[in-house]
Figure 1 (cartoon, rainbow, N blue to C red):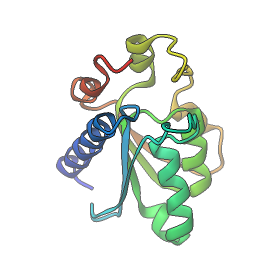
Figure 2 (figure 1 turned 60 degrees about the vertical axis):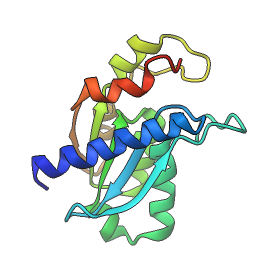
Figure 3 (figure 1 turned 90 degrees about the vertical axis):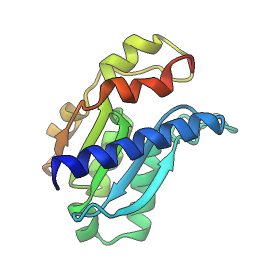
Figure 4 (figure 1 turned 180 degrees about the vertical axis):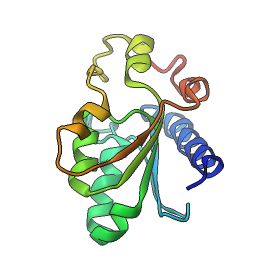
Length: 157
């Protein structure tokens, strides 16, 4: 994947975060693309209306990918996320066998921006740390485009 393609797809994930916020969700978006950069699926956060704290965009994509895609396709895919996958989402990405992650806003910057908001008690556990504890390599690029990725969060928390 080229750096240009990575940035274009990351901007699409950031746009999804804005769309999710406009629809009344928490401002997070993610997509899964194949090795050629073709978008396979997209998701926004699904917290509302039930208060499902596990319905993060990345976790929803990982679950859907396990159901719809063979293991080889998942291994060759890249998950693009508007923000760094949290510990739960990193675990889901690992168990789904997704081979690569590219993210915008870092977990530490997100935590500094929103503080201890009861609907998003951000954990200080980088996705790289979660992935390093596993037995499968997952390539990670990020943070990238943090200023752009932060926009959807301004005033949301």
